[in-house]
Image 1 (cartoon, each protein chain N blue to C red):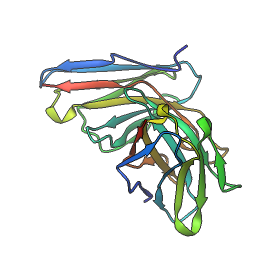
Image 2: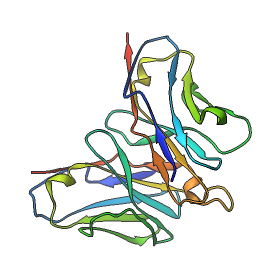
Image 3: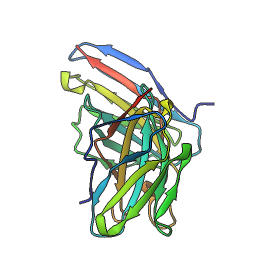
Length: 113
Length: 119
């Protein structure tokens, strides 16, 4: 069965600094990969997703992620964070043989002014 | 217009009671889900419905019973509430996904959540 790991429970960065959130997955076949964001008191919103093709995926709000098959990773990046990016970020993985996606345990992003 | 809405937003109740959470989506999607998010923010799928048919039941206690009166609605009824049921419950919906790959490959649209507190 597929699994997804987000090694960092909390990440703190200064406003304007760059950001990278890590995500590692485990699955034998090519996975479908997603990043969702959850602002405080809100539901989840899709930032971006990868199914195939170009391994660098652009998303909303200036985020991008890169699929690296050799490292089983799908890390999320943003060149310059804004205070409004403070939220919980979830990586998720799915596969066509299964009928659901599995969410990681999330990374809480804190922004210092 | 709210794409996926849930009511109520907050629910506080005593152990042993029965309660329902309602979910409606106006996106025209065929697939709807219920997720449970615990106090550590871990998000786990409970149920999914496609065209009113139950697709996933993730070993959820049978005290939880989803009901889909039509494709736009998926309600969650919980009997004999227990302390461990306290959590935030999210409803979501999605489109058909990639051709031949399944609806779970599509973007999921989440409701704002219902925070259930069992005393």
